[in-house]
Image (tube, rainbow, N blue to C red; front, side):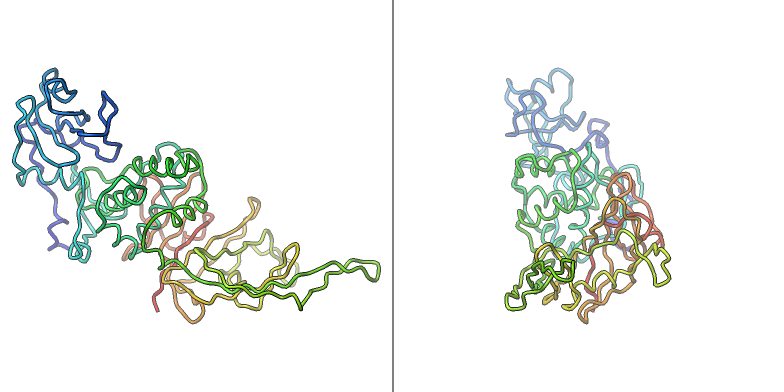
Length: 401
């Protein structure tokens, strides 16, 4: 780690105090402050505000004349200019960090050498990839989904190599690249551009108002163009109809074996039903249950009764990453305990991330040597013994064998 150049503190040159990096923020929509147009936009590197054009009638030119701010960056071409002189400034080593902050780029070699530690403008250390996301209003439900997907290695690597565009897929890729950037000026990122794109694409179903991670995750997986086969499994469902039958002064349900139906369907996630209350053989209340017991639902033998049928589930294909959804009622206080290594159909998995809920949505992420809890902008270490305490809602398990 110490030999990695990205892991060293950066010496920031302020170009005679005309460029103020601490005021630059490229996470928000790149539109002109005056015209609200997104074409031919320049960022004033003195105050961090965006203006359109370079001609004598343009907002950028007027801003340069009025406030004596001369350094500008075209947010599309990534060229530097002096205004109002309209002179292009050569890209020097001293300016390269601004380009890297605006638009992080990666090669496959960069990904292989991805640094674990970097430093922001204040020389504050941060773990690359383990940085907070702004909760603009109530978009914490979306933040945790982005964090979870950005830590699935095949998905992360795909989007780190993707080129910029203004589609939903492109905006998601931009956000992933910034989450994994060793060139951040501040050790957190705003998802504003991506949330805006998701809101428009979903016809305002997903906004900065309160939402549900499960609903958003399923919508994303069906609307992004990513390598999501690593999350896609298959399950065989055997459904046997049941009908009521009156006899001996009571109604009994009879199965119609002749109408049994077997189907196979693909899944993004496996749901497990957390019971409201459990009792042992002595009638004592049980406050916890093992995850393996809940996953018995998918052994092909355990039955689940619905209103019109009895079903059994048998997993026929397990993906590289298994997403588990904990279904529970608001009244359920049962703690689900999970192992260090989870065995499913002869395969072994380890926990990679866990979306949890307390007062807000947060996510626990497995780093190399520790667990990291990210609650919006707050990033801190988490003891593995505390993973059980809050209500875990969605977990991602990674295949290890």
